[in-house]
Structures are given as C-alpha cells and as structure tokens.
Image 1 (cartoon, rainbow, N blue to C red):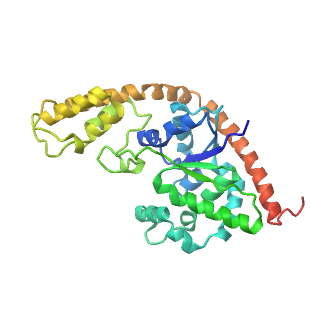
Image 2 (tube, rainbow, N blue to C red; image 1 turned 90 degrees about the vertical axis):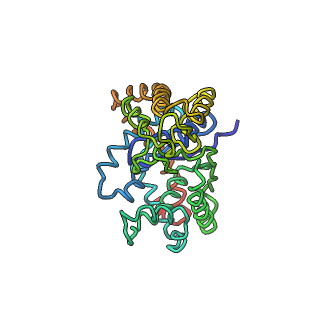
Image 3 (cartoon, helix red, strand yellow; image 1 turned 180 degrees about the horizontal axis):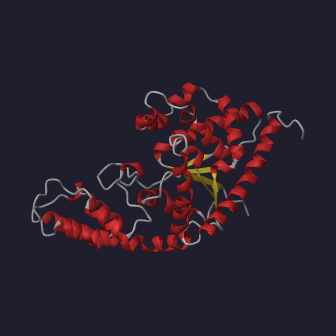
Amino acid sequence: MSEKKRMITGDRPTGRLHIGHYFGSLQNRVKMQDDYDCYILVADVQALTDNFENPEKVRKNVREVVMDYLSVGIDPKKTTIYIQSMIPEVAELTVFYSNLVTIARLERNPTVKTEIAQKKEIFGESVTYGFLGYPVSQAADITALEGSIVPVGEDQLPLIEQTREIVRKFNSIYGEILIEPEAVLSNTKRIKGLDGNEKMGKSLGNAIYLSDSEEEITKKVMSAVTDPGRIKKDDPGNPNICMVSYYHNLFSTKEEVEAVCNECKAGTRGCVACKKQLAKNIIDYLAPIREKRKYYEERPELVDKILEEGTKKARQTAKETMKKVKKVMKLDYFE
C-alpha cells in the first residue's frame, strides 16, 4: 500500500477564523484528513511580518486559531497542528534559500505586489525585508516538512510557483533531494463580506466569526447591506445585489432561498424579516461548532498539549530534512 501524500497548509494567527475561512478552506481540510497526511501550521512568524510591533496580538491568537480548527472537525489524530516559530530549521532553510532568489523576482511576484499595495498604511514606501521575502520563508515551510501538495486559492498560485522555482534551483545545484510541491486549487469562491466587499476580512470589520455569539450574529446580520434601491417594505427588491440573499444561499435550504428571492422581487417580504430568518439559520448552522469550541475553551491545557505534540512531530521531520540539506551543501562539518 502506497503512503499518503503529505498536504501542508496554514493560517496567520492575526484573529479568530470566520465563515470565509470555513467555506473557503476549513471544510476542505476536514475532508482531506482521510486521504492525505495532513499538516497545518499556525504561521506566527509570517504574521509578524506586518504585525512586528504587536507581538502580543499574534501570540494571543495562536490558541484562538487552533480552537477554531478543532471546533470545525480537524482531528489532531489525523492532522498534525504545529507552530511555525517552534521549527528553527525553517528559519535556517529560509536563509539558505535566500541565496537562490533575486530581489527583482520577489518584487515581480503578483501576490506580493498585491499585498504590499494593500498594506501601504503599514509600510508606506518602505517595505521590510521580512515581508518582501516571505515567499522564501513559505518555501522553507513547505519543503522542510516535505509537503507534496498545498491547497491554495487562485490568488496564492504565484507563491507556490515561487516555491517550485526555489526547489528546482536547489536540486539543480545540490542534487535531487527536495520535493517539488503541487498546488491544489480550491473550487470554492471567496466569500464576500457583510458590506458587499469582495473579501471578508478580519481587518475589514465585515466578517461573521465561527465563535460569534447568537447576539453578535444577529447584530451583524441586521447591519448587512441590502438592495439600496428598495426604500419601503413593499417596494420590489433585487436579491442579486443584496448581501442577505447572498448569505441565504450559504445557510438556507433551497426552498427557503427560492421563497426569499420570489417574495423580495414581489415586495411581499421586508428586509427585516428576511434578515431575522437568515440570522436564525446562521446561528443554527454554527451551533455545533460553537459548542465544540466551548469544550476546548474550557480545557486550554488540552489545546496546548495538541500543539506541543504536533510541533514535536513536525520538528522531527524538519530535522531530518535539514540533515539531508546540510550534507549536500557540505555543511555537515562534524557528522
């Protein structure tokens, strides 16, 4: 029987995870657990590239993110969850890889260019070396753990291509020892924010979090953007430009969605009633997730144990990779 392929993915601990993460990646990770050898890193080092002045924020959210993982069904018996900064071999490998990539190549990376533009308020005109070079660090994350597949959204494909370039360059110089990973595209579209923004984001204030209380969910749904042309309750509405209708497609039954759209167009259902029904459906949908999360919130020592064991396992693999790397690079002086 052949060994399972190793899957590597992760998240930056800059805040709790929201329904965009759930539909965009978490659901898929849960499904992949039985078919792949799954590793998920909590990318605290990468989070520091644009949160370097707020380390407490990053540290605090490590456990928050892990509890979100566990609450949606990621099983620590099937998936190794570990902390990026606790794998020093990744930092060492990043240094070696930095000799194989030019600054011009990093600056051309479409994902990096987009993210630098989005973070103008943090960097101004002076981007840090750490942020510009995070694709190199990401290559080290993947290859140190011998990852062969990496699930990504389409916007992240340039990062995986950069990893593949680094691997090919390294192997051409030192010998074929590194695995060249493949990107696996998610077939799930990015979930829009409550305000209609194409992206639901922690920093945009337009997200419903997996851990939100019933009151928080209701309050957020009641503030969701609806058809701006619908002034009175009995005015015909356009569900195609209404965020409430958009979320009904995620959380309501097919029959409910059909009724919502028809009654909206006919002007027989008001936005308030529509929002109340949506809030109830979201609350019911997320209830099992909130309940499981509560279990781990009351047992922080269990969360820490899962992280500690996962990190120990991940580090052992990274050590073995680094031993091979140092041997071919002639850096195994006392072996």
